[in-house]
Structures are given as structure tokens and as C-alpha cells.
Length: 223
Picture 1: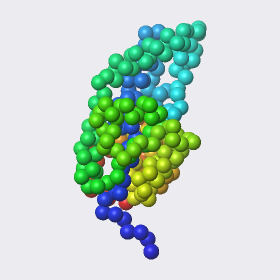
Picture 2: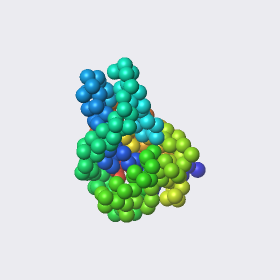
Picture 3: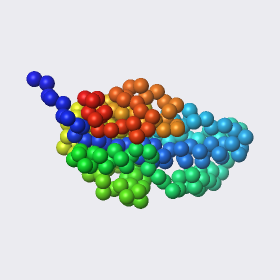
Picture 4: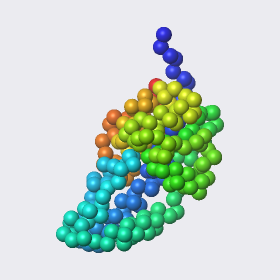
């Protein structure tokens, strides 16, 4: 006999970068500005293909190729870090995130974070945003053999929460993240941001414009 779906999801597992806060745009914007100052273009399509994974774009090599000469790599990376920090501070929650976390907490739904970024990046930001205590735990790149699009992070999050992935929802902004959630057997919801809107997210069970469009009853209807 088939299992009876729960009235509500038993768990929500959130991606971090680009979903809870927009940390992706500052990184891209910093690099694009450096290219612009050298008379070159760095379109977002070059960046978005790796969003949601632990891979990096070797943008300095692309800059050198465009210029036809070598550059001071350490200086370029320092510029990127400084500029990204300026674009990023202060970090604010993306629309609808706080309301969904509050509704899930009130309903007794398990909450966790699954991110392809390292814990040293994710948890300090969650602490500064006052969100660390709202999640049971985080599962980050440090915890698994493979980052997204492998399902490892989502499987680890569901195992930690003690829930069947089939009754859990993954909230994502990237194609790699949706692929990982689907492979884990979870319901996947894509919430693209101003960068990941360039990606094909049609393999998600639901695609919405912002987290404001997500509520527990709508998520329950996806099972």
C-alpha cells in the first residue's frame, strides 16, 4: 500500500547562497566591474553555470586571455574580495525567507541548511542574520564527499533531521541545487534570483518568482 502523504511537509531544507541572502550577485558584480575597467565584458552567463556547486570560475585566466597579457593575480583577487564585500554589506534576508521560516517553526516542521559552500562561510552569516538558532543544523561542503549536483548534501540533511526525503522540500535557486534535490528524492522548489534567472530551472517541481510566493499549503500540494 502506498504511503499516505503528510498534511504538510515534514522538513524544509534551504540552500544558502542566493536563496536566503543574495551573496552571489556581489561576487559576480565585483568581477564584472574589474573586467569593465579593463575594457572587457564578463556576462552573467559565464558565472551562473557554476552557481550551486563548489566549482569556481577561473575568471583571472579569462581576464588575461582577453587582455593578451598576464596580470597580478593576487592583486586581482584582493580587488575582487574588497569589492564583493562592499556590494555585500550589509547582508539582508531575501523577501519571504523570514516568513517561511517562522511559519515552518510554528508548524513544527524540521528546518536545515544544505550548502555547497564551506561551513566557515555559511554559519557566520547565519549567526549575523540571527538565523543560526532557527535551523536544527547545517550541512556544508565540509560534510560530504561531493557537493551539488550530487544529492549527498540533501541526503545528509534529511538523515540528520530523521525524515524520509520523499516528504521533505528542498528550496533552491540554482540548477545544480535542483538536480541534487531531485536525485535525493525530495520535492524541489526553485526561487531564482537576478543571476540564476538565466538558468533553466524547469526540472524543479515548482518555480516561483520570490519566496513570498511560497507557503506551507502550497508546498503540501506538491506531494
